[in-house]
View 1 (cartoon, rainbow, N blue to C red):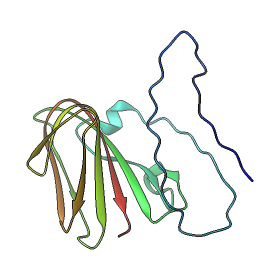
View 2 (view 1 turned 120 degrees about the horizontal axis):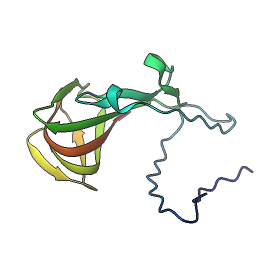
View 3 (view 1 turned 135 degrees about the vertical axis):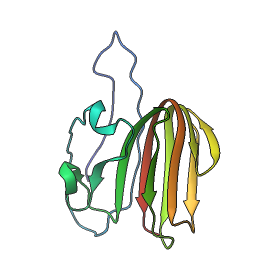
View 4 (view 1 turned 180 degrees about the vertical axis):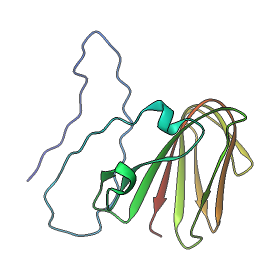
Length: 136
């Protein structure tokens, strides 16, 4: 049996965790851990691929039928992402304000997008967002 735990290594600073569990695409694989920093410049006004099944575009590799993108948006910065309507998209706004397919979100909000072929992000104010492309 494998054990997993997260904790704050810096006793004098606050740590904010956002933990997500995505079902793997096959059974019996060993647990793994990969960590990578993505520069703010790579996420500014766009959706940067940070996790994918094949490590595309320098992303970390996950053993799941899913991908994760991260973006930072302010003011007139906007992005679109083509979606497969047969899949699901989950949008989590980490902080700030952002309009997602016409709906206003504030930090901590999330939106499940189904049966859509396009995701549109706009009107950001200090917005940090994660977008998950998930199997149905």
